[in-house]
Length: 402
Image (cartoon, rainbow, N blue to C red; front, top):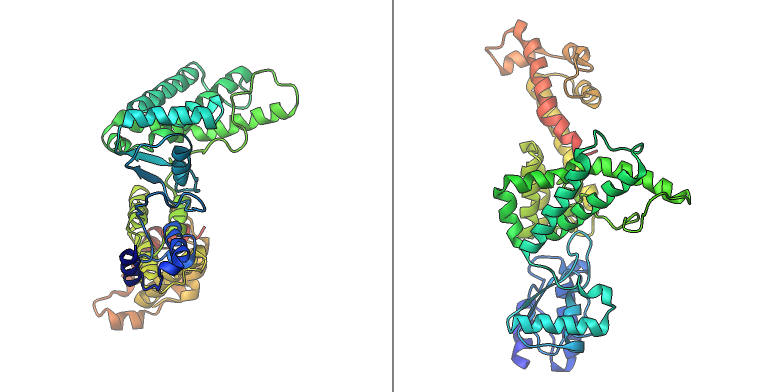
């Protein structure tokens, strides 16, 4: 133990000893939990801890998701050990994963026996995850049931008969919940990449979520009226459904990743990059996000600073730089360009404030910088290039500020 603490001190530049072993244990907990700002920094964290009869109580690390077990456990010891990973953590973990190295069938039996003792009967069947194939069958069945409901109805909305609305909401929630379970398996990543059928089934959730929200809202109104005409008992009305949060990779999703990013965190950086690719963001937008991550890595951004303020500052600066560059290239007024950019919407014709931009141009200076320039072509070409800049640079950057 003395040598372990010595190695620990050398690596993390600490000064623990056997006399301060409780504080040493607390330091391990803090580095594993990563809740304090000082331990969010890459290199000051602990990813894996190997223990024997330790960290059983007073252990609070919500980000810990996986427990590797190399011994046979039962009853109280099993529940206590498994509880190390039972903390949910918004946007990161919804449950714990247990990897057993000894007698998996015995361990499964022990889990079932322990849960009979320490939980109510209704919880027993949900504590052990089914296999991926079983989860996939559940998802396919749920998709088929939703298809059957919608196949014979032209549209479903708040005016559809209540019985049909109830069936639709129940079916959608089951599809949503079964998908939520499916994506926790590694096998899903391979399937979604190569299976067109699975992609189409997942797309059903994305395409139906708007209708679902409308129909569910109408049922909530009916429920509150005190005179329900159908059985609402199986419907999750308040907070139960994680609506499409993991299906739609959008700016909000990227914001959440940014919020959890710590210096040199390769996993989250890869997730952000994948999200940017999936969204087909303009290259200049991707570059700004990368610049934000680089600034965090290089300690140019205070870890305590609001990441959304940081994001706004970076994108605003890039947008202003783009306008300044255009003004300097074409020798037109910056304020006229800014006024145009504020009002512009893609496809708008004429371009807002284009007359003021044209009136502000200085062909003599442009000619000095571009000796081959022709006066008659200068205005039309500048106007064309400004539209391109608006569509491909200014608007994409501005969209990230909304």
